[in-house]
Image (cartoon, rainbow, N blue to C red; front, side):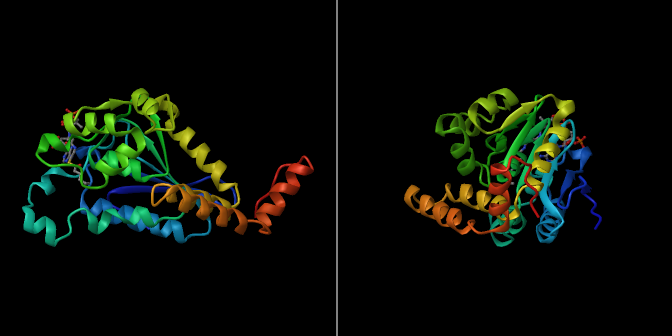
Length: 260
Ligand code: HXC
């Protein structure tokens, strides 16, 4: 399928490959509008349904992952229009329904909705040029796609308040120290690093990959006791699967596992 605001490409040569999605509104620093979010949702859903895809990487340009929701569009709303058209909610939730791992490869600005989009991904890998922030306060609004909820869970209350109340940007090193980002790499290695991580995931057992994602996400909902019980049940459920038998047999026989 072809899109107007995204570039898509399938990478890798294994049984399961990686869908690379590049946000592509370069003149507006990949500002996120309805068309882009609709197309992103469609591309993610198609990849989730495709047994030949094992992981997804979302990236932007060298200058911007995404500089936020499109302010020109936001400015056309009053409360009644925002509320009745379900501004943001309508097409921002699709990524939450995706079961396969999604990696954000972030270079340049990831601001407002761009930072929120990165935080909706499962792994965030940052170029040393990346800058994260929730500058909505400077526009007289607040984050609207989970920023006030996911940011404190990722970096703690103090830094989340600092960022969301002042609107300042945080560089890649600070983001890694704070726990928003899993690794920082030189900008020219960003895509390679993200695609390598995706390939590793593609070559693992599908059921255990989906179970890890589901179980870690569960840790953000409900109590610790419920989360641990959920994890235990998934852990038990994976015994007897071909991947468990193959993985353990390969280890015990000192050979590389070949997951089907
Ligand atoms: C619409 C945007 C945009 C945005 C940049 N552009 N960000 N257009 N919406 N969010 C456009 C500019 O208008 C400009 O278009 C072009 O992209 C290049 O931007 P410049 O400002 O000229 O670049 P630069 O001087 O390098 O500054 C980069 C920047 C700045 C620091 C990222 O553009 C900026 O502050 N952008 C807004 C960031 C922001 O406030 N994001 C939060 C949005 S609210 P022209 O046509 O002039 O060349 C939000 C709410 C989320 O995200 C709610 C839930 C999703």
